[in-house]
Image (cartoon, rainbow, N blue to C red; front, side, top):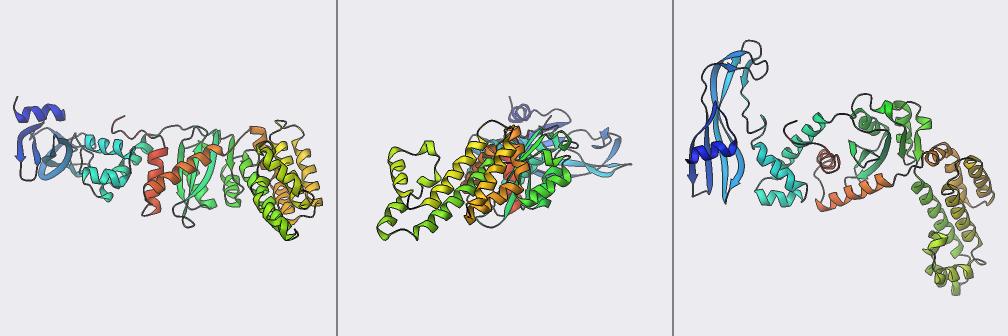
Length: 407
């Protein structure tokens, strides 16, 4: 079998595309495969398939998978035709996308390694620039989004993550299966609305719940774009627990100033014990905390309300939950502890969303897990040049898209 026939079979080419020659460049360790378009008549327009006139040809080169240690290039004079309806058009080659300088097989190999390694490592392995790899990823994500049909939007999760620490943010919209459905720049109402706009048409009409933090911007967007949002918005218990632990910590720090100097060191050792659940305290921690209760009554009271709120949430009794929360709010305000009163005010204002979360049995834990993986991705990549690349990488790794070339 000749070299031309071998590469004809390897590339899977059929007439009128034929391998005419194979050139070995030992100096640059390259193999150049010359492909010709044999047909000179009966050429069809690539858009409407109408018979068209051959106009001219332009030489183009694509990188293919390496042959042994040699870099393999495909070189062809690609015909241009003149269609009476669509004007001048370039014929589509069967081995590559029209806008790419790489063959489909080469791009898929790059994407496979990119899904398992970092952009920097893939860049060094293939000796490609970061920009070239990013364009391959961009084309892959665009293919995946174009082929994406119906997605599951019954239970949506909304969260935010930082492009850089304390700087730019992006909004992530995912579903209960851990699939990132959309990513948009910022963390405003417009950002959330943009995420919803990226979903297939009428997807939001099937939404039964939207789990989020208590961001006023996200609430505003949900009310505007999701039907009956008041019955679907659910606030994750993690954010309520976070507010309560912060309140306990503030009250503990205030109590320290009222302690005798001899007790402050022992009180400092219990700083993390006050933040734990009762069942997670070891015997030593319980003993230390119990000794300090008479001297730190405000802290002990705040800790009691934290545990009481947790019991209400995890009681698995939705009926009567509104009354139990109302009683908790009234008692918390009666303590006259400002940090605890602030939390009580927040819970009172957002009680409708808390009750929705209890009714649905929802948690934003999956969104937080995705957020954690996205942060690891950012650290592994040593940061991203801009928000567009960051958003693209999130969809590439967590969008569960079909990024192949064919249906």
